Length: 173
Picture: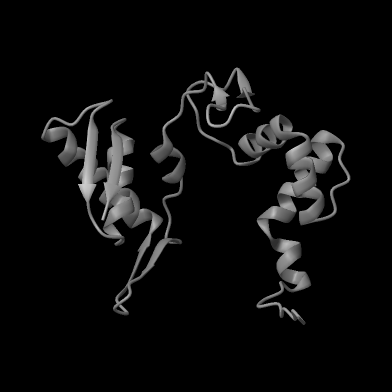
């Protein structure tokens, strides 16, 4: 059987040059003394030097935290059961809401051709309002907020508002 596969897309040289992954590879090469030339090399390094890879991701991603990790990974060979960034404390929503400008945060394309967009500035405002409402009805740190909601632009907004106040989000639908 002749299996001829055609590439669906290939990035241009300009795209590769300005891609975030290219900046990450340059960062890793400089900080860790690596000679990573592309995606295959990066993958190889990530599985051979897993703790260093994830420490580099944490630093490169400029994770906002109240306590940095004591150890990147514990029990790597136990799955499930591996522990990541042991001892760290951070707020998921704080990291996702760090931008507050007019760049697009979400683009929603529904199955019925409904399309919505929201900027980071509008997202931050909407999340803050919903988080305030959740607090007003008594939701607090550690509480669970469970939703039966389809995948709409409002779904991640509800998740971010919930996690912003330290509550736990779960959704199905």
